[in-house]
Image 1 (cartoon, rainbow, N blue to C red):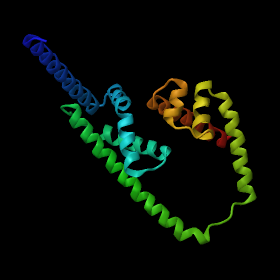
Image 2 (image 1 turned 90 degrees about the vertical axis):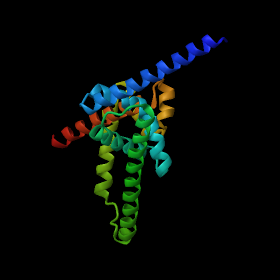
Image 3 (image 1 turned 30 degrees about the vertical axis):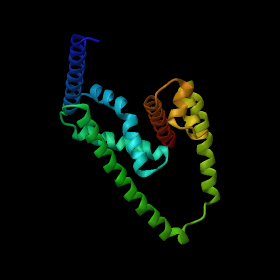
Image 4 (image 1 turned 90 degrees about the horizontal axis):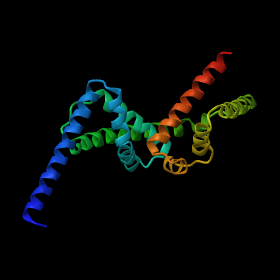
Length: 200
């Protein structure tokens, strides 16, 4: 490789770096101005990054970790400001994710203390309660059969087979973020139908 070739490669790398900086600045500026499509791009790109941080910080189960990602992303969209480059963006996202994770740890400690304090006074499950739970389980099975095949499959793999988002994604050819989005939409649909059923 000649000196000229090396110089050209250095210029190309510099241009690529500048383009990435411009992209991050435009993306974060758009999110700060309320652009939902820009936020969707960020969510998809940084979902796994934020998930890794909250799981590493808390060691909680996957479902709780997903809840933490949702809370972190809500804080992101509320407090977003223009950020100059990806390194600064990742640092800011990491700080938010850690703060959310620490909040969950504090709440979990308080919850466990309350459970220990009330353990002796906990009431037993009644027959009426068991019957009500059985009715809800039967209703859920009927509603799942009314969802599209992929959505029903995602719920069954997640909650019945206890598969992780990654494992579900590998079976369906989807990313973890895409599986989580479909799971959220399906659960939202089921909750809305449950409310309708309760009012009938």
